[in-house]
Image (cartoon, rainbow over all chains, first blue to last red; front, top):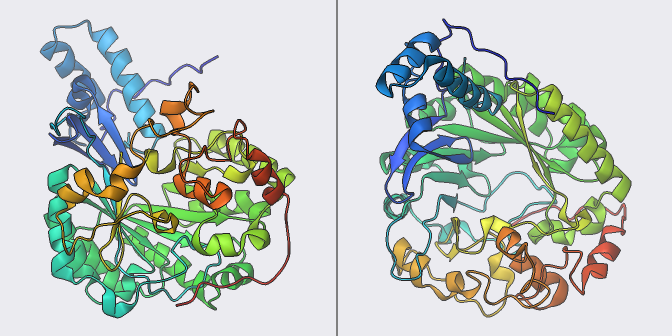
Length: 96
Length: 362
C-alpha cells in the first residue's frame, strides 16, 4: 500500500536547488526539467507548477494562484501540487 | 519533435565529451578503450565549441565533460564556458585529481552546473590501491568540501566490484558525509580495461544479491536526503540493460580525437564506420553515419528478441556485449536469460580470481 503523502506547510517557499532548472526545448518537444545527469519531461501543468517555485512565493500563494488561473477547486489543486512537489523533493529536484 | 523525414528520428538528449584519455589514476575497471588516444590527437578547444553548438542545435540538453581526467586539459575552463554558452547543462565527470580549488572556482564561474566525483572505496588504503594512486582518497575528500562550499551540486560515483562490494552501505554513508545529493552505485560493466580485469573484479552471486538488498534498504531509509541510482551488475541479471537507452536513440559520444560513437565501447565492434567531427557536422553524423544507423530500432534483431514483448524496452540489450560474448553484434545480448548463449555469461560470472589488477595506463 502506498504511504499517504505528507502535507506541505502553507508558508514553505519551494524552489529549485542549484543544478536543477526548467527549460523549454523545441527539439525535445516541450518543457524539460534538467537535473544532475537526469532529464525529466514535464507536461504543461507540471511546468506551470514548477515555474512558480521561485523561492519567493509561498506554497499557499502558489496554490491560490493556480486555483484562480485554472478556475479549479482549491483543495483539488492543493492535493495535486502537494503530490507533484513531494515527488520532486524525494528526487532532490526541489527544496521545500 | 522536429521532423527528420518519415522515420521520425529522435533527438539525442546527452553528449559524452571525452576531452582526453590522459588520467593520473589507473582504475582497473576503466571503461575507456584499451587503445587510448594520444595527447597530440586531441581536438582543440575551438572544435569542441563548435561541437557543443551543433549538439545544442540537434536537441542535446546535457553535456558530460569526461575523459580520462578532463582536468588534464589546461583549457578545461574555456571548454566549459563554451558548452555553457551553447546553452548546454554542463556536468564535470572527474577523478578529482588535478582539480585544484582555483580551477574549481574558475569552472563554477564559467557556468558549470554539476560535478560527478568518483570514489574508489570507503577505506582510504583500499581506495588508493584500486585507483593505483597514493593520496587520491584524501584529495577527493578535500575536493568534495570545496565543491559543497561553492554550492555546486555533487554526485558521488562509486564503481562496485569484489574488493569494495561489502562496503556498499559505507559508500552511501561516505557520499552523505561528503555532501552529495546523489550517489551512483555502479556495478562494473565489463568493457575496455574492466574486461581485461574481469576475473579480478567479478563479485560472487551471493555478494551481488546482498548488495542489491542493502541498496534497496538504504534507498527507503534516505529518501529525500540522497538519491541512490544503481547501475545493475548485468552478468548476474536475467534481462539485459537497454544500453545507452537504445543505439542511436538518446546519446552520442565524442572521443578525444573527434570520432563520434553511439556508445563509449562501440569501437570494439568490427566493420563499423565511425565519422569524425573533423569531417562532418554532428547532425550529419547523427542522421547519416553508418555506425549510428547500424543497429537503430529493433528490425535487425533475431529471435528470441524478434517475438519478445521486451523488445522495445531493452532493444535486445547491448550490441558490444553481444559481440564480445557471442561474436555477433546482432545477437541477443547473452545476459538475457532467453539467449541461447546465456550459459556463457553464467559461467563467466562464476569465475573469481584474486590476481593483480592490470592498471589502466597509456
